[in-house]
Length: 309
Image (cartoon, rainbow, N blue to C red; front, side):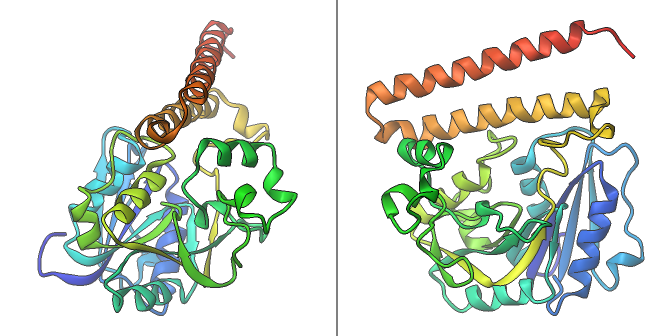
């Protein structure tokens, strides 16, 4: 909704799971600081989403798309509809805590050096979603994380840089990157970097945004004192082995997600990591991405050749 400028807007991105959008709006409406405007980006819906009583007193605009442009592009489309000084980007699978929005806004708005603020995100079982509290990964960081070496000596910054394991996730401090699933950004900072990079369709778009915002001199602030719940993987279905998740449509979604994850990670590597990586390591990383792509192509061919139900 373009009109008189307000302080706080929220962009909620949902994909074919209206029950999650409903829960996300209900949590925003129940919070101690409601957004002045909310844009729901209803991505490629089977049935158009229409707000119900859960929206309460929220000023909600629903933007339906007839395609799936990716998370970054959906965020940009929502941001274009909300002229506010601050924007809260929220994946529909996040349920904000009652004081989360107020805490983020209060911590960030009075310090012009803060461009982005993110809360502590917890998984449904209470574990920390590490994507909310991390560093910008190098090749070594990725290797240490994959091999779980950062868990051997969490206080050692060399091993724990990606998850920032030496910092208390219950505290408040600057970090290098938070997650796009729940991210408050100063409009000026978003405009300065030209918005989200739409070349990232799924994953790594938040790392890219945080890095570009930091390069413009802004800080990324983490608040472990306010928390929200992230139903991580609700859209992608990665890791879901239930019978319901094995239907052809869900399987096709998982294949699409895996392909986009590899493409986004490769793009982030080429844009931000390769320029500071020795050429032998770069060759090895590129070969790894090539192998992953070949595996995905093989899985796609196998799925297409499989007999129908």
